[in-house]
Image (cartoon, rainbow over all chains, first blue to last red):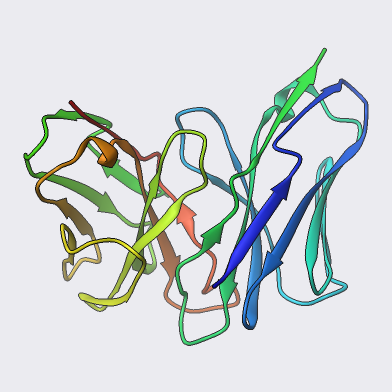
Length: 112
Length: 115
């Protein structure tokens, strides 16, 4: 059974204090690993897709990396507007755009 | 370009009732997936529709059913509502083809409360 575990569950940082969020996964054949940002009461907002070990993608203060067992979301010099829940999801290799298996998320709070 | 839209925004029902939620995919997208997100949890995959057929289903009972129309819009139906069905219901759409064909873009969700 596919599994995604995110840690920590919650993280409180000071503005400008860099850190990393972890996503460990178990899947029988990975098509892609996805990172989303979710604000309270809203739908997840797509951030990145990673397809193979060693791949990295960046967007503003965020950088996502992928190994064969886990992914990291690095946040550099965060600002209060980066506060949100960050969700990690995996998609199993197969035909078409299959359903995603999500972790529970990391609730990130950036204090001014 | 409008993104994924869902209606209604909020809904309150009582146990045993039936509910229908609606979703319009992003322009150019033909695949629609539905997810249930309980408070404090990640979204859970319910099912996916492509070419008006259910092509994949998660671990949800038959009380959950759906439909996709020729214009790619979709409905989620839940019968015999239980208190545990209270959640945020999310619709996601995927593009027809191209390098991002498996990337799913989510709508704002419908908050269902069952009393």
